Length: 453
Image (cartoon, rainbow, N blue to C red; front, side, top):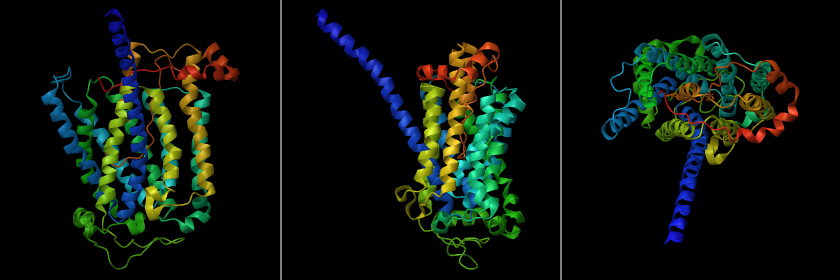
């Protein structure tokens, strides 16, 4: 009996160790797959309804309200009231985040219509240097030399991809591409990273003193984002958008026509291009709304799952695995845009500018995401105190964004002790061989990050 009990206990212990790792592996694979689908179906969605970017920016935000409402009702009914029950919500702060993300969402969709998928994935990496800028101005974050170097590499990679449009050169791959890539709309898409990165940093700054469940935070941000988004209809009337501009008398029909197209009814039949025009400003593309609901619905599902599995991975693993997956996401998504399996007839060949820009940005991401963590491991400063863990929990939750967002998620890594200095910094920068020796230690540096509070 004793031997049997011991064997049973050993099996139970192995199961206890194996099960959490297996569940985390499922979360990680699901996050990576949903991240790829989130970017791919965003582009397929805008390709299916290129004349209705405002409608798409709104409907992809509205979907969060019933979904999050059901989640909150479920939590209220089946879970015990949390320690935040009855606590007043920082409504003004949540509304400000909603304002920033509403601007980011509409710029993302407006620019994304005439920005190729591979170009989108390169441009969203600009959120990293922008987040560094806002973190320095708002949070007082300080960065070491290699982080500025990494940010410079990322900016260089983005410029490599934009070089053909800036110089007026059409890459060979663009002649066969299924979408238009125009410099102005590339810049509009890039502009979306400014309010999105600011919202990311502001959530870390404004909500760190509030113990809020992440789903409560998402619900109220989606609510304010939807209300504020309704006030941004005049943005579509600006002459600078050219063929994508909506005439002022047509504004009342903007959402109605979007609904009709979503349900398969073509609205724009004449005075339009049957396909993308290469090398000239395009006319509005003729509607091809048959089956438009499919990529829209698939994007909504992918976007919701992307956020959910991101929360689960951060909560159950920490920043290390999350950063690895988000770095791996970039090449996978870039290649997915070139695969008919994901893009169908809209698959695009990758030109040399895309390939070189992708390679350069991957180097910058590698340096940014890992060097700081390795340096602190070497200096003996990786272990976090309880208060620092709470700060990291809030920083992780700040990555959640509702609506049409394909931005690069970035965990703010701002230790309370500030940047490396003195002997530790000199040892880190002057002895690169020590980084190789300590590389394996990074994968054992795991925290537990949850939600606000």
